[in-house]
Length: 91
Image (cartoon, rainbow, N blue to C red; front, top):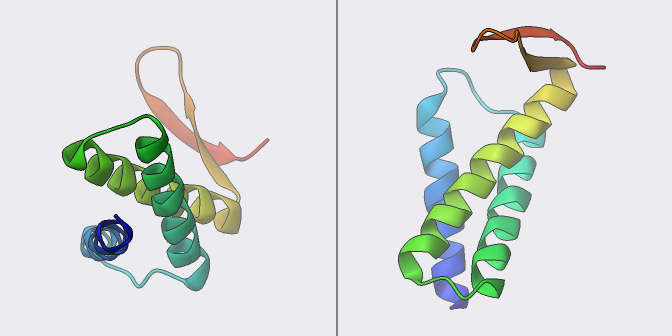
């Protein structure tokens, strides 16, 4: 189980780095790592099978990286009420 979690974290980090054309900073990598671990722990706590464990790890890593990026830039995405989103300073 521990090896699977480490493998999932490595895969999430690689997947996230491939999605962005710029280098991720340390905050984003840290956020991805923490999010991945929390996603894996949550999936395990809910009794998920291996597929859902991987999905939970990847989703947690993506969310963690985005939260870290928003905290670093101060920009957040908000719904415009018409099905779209806009970016503005975080409230």
